[in-house]
Length: 173
Image (cartoon, rainbow, N blue to C red):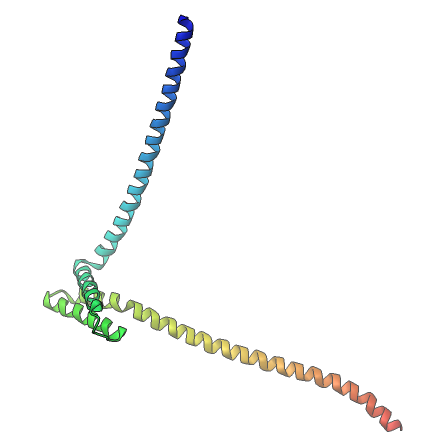
């Protein structure tokens, strides 16, 4: 009876130890997941910090204030201005703030470059598509002209051969 009790206690302890080991493993996995999430947030924070340290504090303030101004300005429903006009008003507001706060010309220039970079990129893409389209159209026109001449030449040769036997038959008669 004592051995059966000891075996049961050993099994209970083994089961308890397995459950405890499973619990500690899950806690370890949870801690690792939390560390991975923390590392992701730290890397995102470092990237954002690097961007703002690159553009500078003054430019970052100008961008933030301009985006707030544009957000509020775009919420006013009775101002049905064109999208570009609202954009230029926002840029003008940022330039006004840079003069009001007496920011350096370099930070204002960076601000203007950052604000106009989407428009510059859009313009460059449009120009690229124009040039590519014109080149592609010219290439296709040349290809189709060459194809047309080739097909015409082929049909002329076919019909010349069929005309020659007819002409020989008609001249013999």
